Length: 417
Image (cartoon, rainbow, N blue to C red; front, side, top):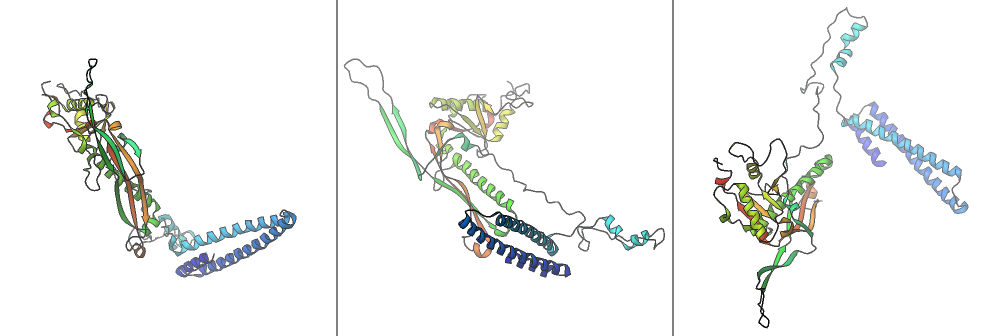
């Protein structure tokens, strides 16, 4: 309560005037009343403890007295809060309301003289222009601050959702992968030596990688705009996922980078292309290449520009062959879902068994941490906001993924078809 009284006293000094002096006096009286209430509660609490000790319960008289004291105290606290808010507004907590033109006219001396009969039947009433100029009474039309923050567009992140999920408590993932299987199984004549087959293995390792970033922020702005804190956290997490999307597809495995799917994928066998093949045909050839590796494809990933080119493919009569502009036909080619990703280079495609050929292991989920213990943050009232995650990508069978580039010359069917 001492802190409340001090704060209100400071407001009285800033605003001044007899009205504020009266308010301070009322504050002092309310604080005095609260102190008396606290003392009465203390005395009755001691009395109640004695009654419980001697009688086994609190008497009705003592219980009623405690309830009345509590009720009176709530009323005193409410009055104190109301007074604090009034004095805060007088100290500059609220901007003055701009008078309307009607109020200016009604309060003018000319209007009062006219209605009281002290002037002729007509009179001149001076109304100063109420504008947003500095010497005006205020802003005629105060700017309306809309709630929330206009969010920047975000790229759709889809690659993680295609993969097998996993978790780990280690700093690396090791797995034994079959390298070469030489199968010499066959029928044999009784009493002869059986053929020998051979399998070679290799030990593969997928290290846990850290993806992180940080930004500085003013403590005051985050205190004054709590919603900004939530927005910053959201954008920081999005930044992590954006980098993760890139790493899963394109990481080169050097230093802190993951070894992504595309650097490990089998190259598309361009010998499969035939004269007149379109982008649609190339995708079908790539699906077969994955299927011949004894895996079943689960998705096709390409840049949005390539998917647009496929959807806009027309026959010689100018009719769309793949979609109807008036209907949503879904994103699929040859029965497999098509996933558009801005992480893919324009002109490239990736076909694969995402649900079996690779797995993403989370070591630490994405988190946002805030600290003042960084450089001179403490003395400058700055905060450091850091977002971080740790994960490992294991590509079990490189041949289950096929990466290639569409032949630009054959993006659409020949005009003669």
